Image 1 (cartoon, rainbow, N blue to C red):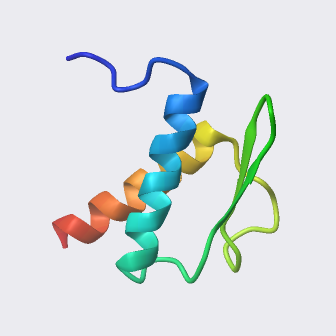
Image 2 (image 1 turned 90 degrees about the vertical axis):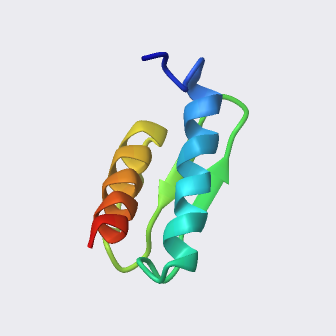
Length: 71
């Protein structure tokens, strides 16, 4: 199985897309993505006050969306 991620920017974009899906499904009330030249920071208000890396955000949001689709 080929990886969907070719670099960190692609991973961050996928995490942002999952955030939109989770938002539309009502799984999260909002999310914030801060774009910097060399990195992105993700925040999901009301869950944690700390920032998430693109990898952490992707895994967290992917699990949330998958669980919602399977329920």
